[in-house]
Image (cartoon, rainbow, N blue to C red; front, side):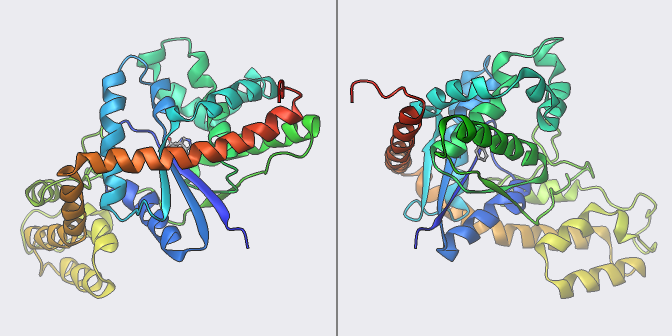
Length: 336
Ligand code: TRP
């Protein structure tokens, strides 16, 4: 039986944090280990440039960081294909073909793009670039050039997959049934909040714990996490429902631990410092094996190059096969 192909990826604009881990990485490792799928993970450097065109160093540097994060958390290059988006020129070619199948108005209505444009006023001013407005078209090419049929995404990415499906339907209705319509698989993990209680954990907000943080950094960050503001003295009764430390305990600690922590907190029997120390310990227990794996690759940078080269070659092969079919359908198959 042919395995369904998963295509997924990240923009290399920063190191990955525990929010990424719970939101997607953990799930990718699970999908990889199930052996039921063929998983392709792209490092979306071209997409990263759409809102970082003025900062190529940042994108270049983070390609390796992101790959290192993948490997550290258990993505195995023998089972999952990791590749660099810009090294697949077929994707750029397909993006141009798709650009005829999507209107500017439709792109402007895409809720994900709309939100992002609003957030990037500083970069774009009053007028957004053609490349940024069109990145859903390029993402549709990322997915379909690899024949991706399952796309694990967070909720914010759903409109991009919907737009990809529309492009595929339009393509097939004009040129014949060549492409497969991908399906979004919504990950059941919610986006996790920042140490300061912000809805989003993120670099620009300074409220993230990175997978590559040292034990000392984790301890320090956990100590700064926001707790119940009404709890002043150690034996005041606390409210774990408004405490970020209790929120993270639910992710990193056992159910039993959580229950005990909440009970003792409500009775004023457990101080915040003890609670934070326990949380930092539990986070460090999860991050420690990742640190060790990361160290292994950090000491062998040539391995990263090899992994990316091999993954990219394999992905490129798939892309070439798809483009052959696409060009034939579009009557662009000259000299063959
Ligand atoms: N848009 C994704 C993000 O911001 C990255 C991405 C690029 C992607 N191409 C993709 C995800 C194809 C899934 C499939 O994280």
